Amino acid sequence: MQTDTALAKLAEYPHVVVAWVDDDGYPVSVATSFRTDAAAGRVLLDGPQPPIPTDREIEVVGSHIRPQPGVGYDQRRYVSIWGRAEAGERGVALTPERAWGWDETEMPFFEYSERSVPQSKRYLDQLSRERGVLVKPRLALGWLALRTTRLPFLTATFVPVFLGLAIAARHGSFDWLTALLTLIGASLAHLAINVTNDIFDELSGADAANKNPTQFSGGSRVVYYGLLSMRQLATLAGGLYLAAIVIGLVLLAMRPSTALLLIGVAGVLVGYSYTGPPLKLVYRGLGEIAVAVGFGPIMLLGAYVVQTGRVASEPFVASLPVAILIALILYVNEIPDRRSDASAGKRTLVVRLAPSTVTRIYLVAAALAFALIVVGVAVGILPWPTLIALLALPLAMRVHTGIQQHYDSPYTLMAVMGTNVKLHLYTGLLLLAGYLVTLAVALLG
Amino acid sequence: MPWLPEGVERLLNTALVSELTVIRADGRAVTHPLIPLYDGERILMHSSTLFSKKLEHIKANPRVSVSLSDPVGNKGLTDRATIQGDARVIEDDPHRQWEKLILELWRAKEPAIDDFLKARVALPLFFERAVIEITPRRCLYWPDGLTAQSPQVSVAPERRAA
Image (cartoon, rainbow over all chains, first blue to last red; front, side, top):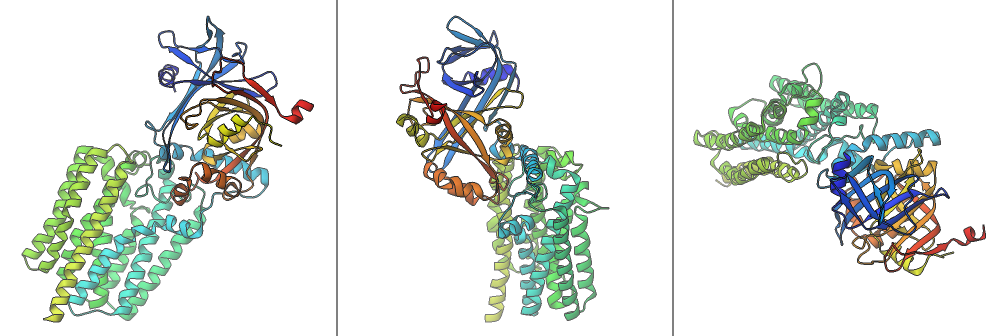
């Protein structure tokens, strides 16, 4: 921090604490009143008892925190300046030589914490060396699994799989066992992709570069934080892929189908190539398309084909709004990551485009998703009860407004990202409800 | 055996923030705002490994000073105190040990900590922590908060004997 900036900040505090090392070798820290002289670049300190020495360096600290009973704290800030004091008329004067400080209104606590991760690693490494045993951060197994796999994002898999199963049921094909295996296999594949994505983000330096991760963006960071080793993460990814492939093969054996084989292979390739070499689709601005294809047509058609053994136009059309909305989750989640992504060479769409363009594209794409439902019903491909999904449209408007308002604020954007996840989930659930109504009507009729 | 003035103990039991001054390797003082806890004999503070430079300084030089000076952080108390002491860093298990040593005292002073603990999965490194245990040696106390006046000075019995 520049010393003139520090002086200006210090002037806002009602009192300061002056610290120095006394002749016994102990620090002394004493509160005192003060004023700043910006023109002269000095702090004038009223003389406390014990008196401030002028033969050694002193530190002047302004510190503030506002307790919020039952909630915690806010308004956390402090500023320190160092230098040698000179005797003055009423006390001593200090011309700062160095300064340091933090103000949570300028750097949110979460970002301050992220910027301090290297210090934590140094400290734990040193502790490990002193002890001769590895000292590393830990999480309870359940929380670690949740964080590592990013389990809550499985809604992105549940929506297309359930829709595919519902459409198959409407077309007269439904089997509980293969439906369950489809859901488990697709979920395992999704988790494998999440973990693989984190491996490549760590290897590319994207994790280290990202100082503003949120619960929706920035990946799991389990290797970066030292919670797991790269080997453990790679083993987990391999295990998840293997389990997903085994379930895929079982499904193929139960329901032999060239279409299913092609969909399965395409799913694995798209999932791996999202961040994996040589294609590294997300690095080329193709991440949204990969996610749209993977969590739209591939998942939904895959679930449908397992049940029916054939490809049809209805599940494909139904997958399009789901595909667009899942791509928009990634798209919005890339906004807070854009600087770290750019520095890691991850040229996502948000990195490539101006904020106003990003915002406009969001609106157009969200509108297209809902327009496709209307057109699908109008041309008779989708059943009319699926129009109930339009009830989720206001969420898209809220996200669009939120992006405009919070584009540069990762932490206030978090609520917007949450609403965007709900937009995909609620639209998917409403489409599903539309199909269930259609099924019920058909059964009763 | 407790020897700190009653007013200082009240400050320690009330304050939500204090200033801990430690000595860097180059001999300079550096100060960190921290919540002070008090077990009736020793001052207990704690630090995340994220902000652990202070811990490294204390391990190299255990002499520290604690200032209790902010009426806002002290819930309206206007008296002030400075406590010099010897600190040690307790870091055998940064994951769990601090909970056993200070969580009860911390919770009593700041009940909201339980909500923060629920967010451990979101901030895993923040909750890898070491405890700073400070044995007071000398205390300066300004009952009316006016530090321009001479403080009441108290010294630990063992230091008086020395």
